[in-house]
Amino acid sequence: MPAKNLYLILILFIPGINNAYADQRLTFGAKLLGANWSGDNGTASADFESDKGGQFGLNVSYKIGNFYTGLNLQRGEYSFKNNAPDKFTVLGRVTSSNVKIEQSDLDLLFGYYFWPQVSLFVDIKRVNNNWLNEPYEQKFLGLGLGVSAYTPINNRWTLFGSFGVIGDGEIKNSNDIKVGVGNSWALELGTVYSINARNFVNAGIKTRNYRFEYLDSSKQDYNINAIFIGYNYSFAL
Image 1 (spheres, rainbow, N blue to C red):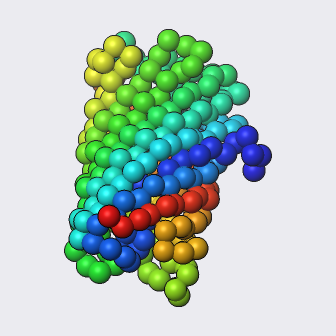
Image 2 (spheres, rainbow, N blue to C red):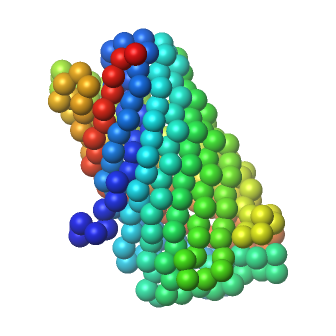
């Protein structure tokens, strides 16, 4: 994958890192992610797929006892040479092609380790898709639930995974007018290598799916699939 398709992204939390040490812990991290955005505009127009893309993000998370919270901000661009995701307005669907779309995500998480290596979390998620060369922006806001887990392989390596679902979020256009509803799910699997008590590197795969239904009964379904490598710095308070 070309280096220009990779962007920094900060990880929201690494299960296992937060639970392995002190009762209070603050974590920051960086993550390189290369991604592909593909989907189906429905019966009215053709499928679409980006030719390159990725995201840049910043993150901070805090853990006290079994409870943790985190804020994740990320942004990146996806280029579509041919067909692209359709735009949806109060008047209906508008086709789109040969565009660049800037996607920005915000996740605010609150989680708790109900079991030693498994936690449940609540996710407040906001996604903005901004057509850079056209006057259009699409906003998605929803509330979701998820589960995360980890398992140590030895004193250096740990496997981790998480799965979350966002249900019945609102979709708004550039003028903050509701144009539909949507849902989403995300799956992430990876491994963490502990350099020492404060420094960690990680790698893995992630997939996100969005399903939107608009006021005119049109539907849109797309996936963003990615591979990543990253670094985390974590310290006790």
